[in-house]
Length: 192
Image 1 (cartoon, rainbow, N blue to C red):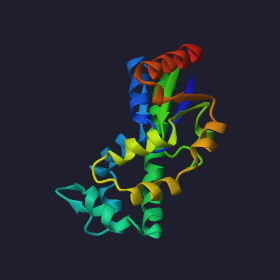
Image 2: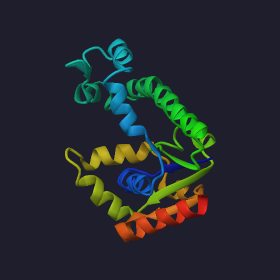
Image 3: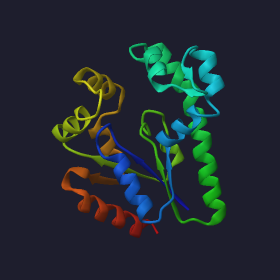
């Protein structure tokens, strides 16, 4: 089985590309979706212990949690130390389940693949990319996003150029949906 790591900086089209892999029949483990699920279950006691007041209606309230960590690097680092191992364990279970089933290819959608030293967990890496202006337009179109928030996020991520230099495959999402879909199909065909 080949474990394909899918990553890309904010606003590059990673989530859309992950859906394209799923549409091609490739099982995809979505780290962001896993975090959402953890915030409604397993992670609640951990978050409550470290970030009192971040729980509302029986689950982690992302807005309250954000108030506790945004602009506070120590708090953000602490949150990541709590959550990243849980996400990794979930992904490991996903991979093992598909290995046992004999699945030929799976995708781990990991936004911070390089930032969390996750390259050792995958056999091949796909980086989604787009020109900086396209990325900026996409990100600033998101509700509640500001230029300042965007710059802070970028500062915490490995640069797009560095990611592309370590990729086995690159998908430029600025060329349109059909071009991205064709690139996904090409990768799936090559690896299966």
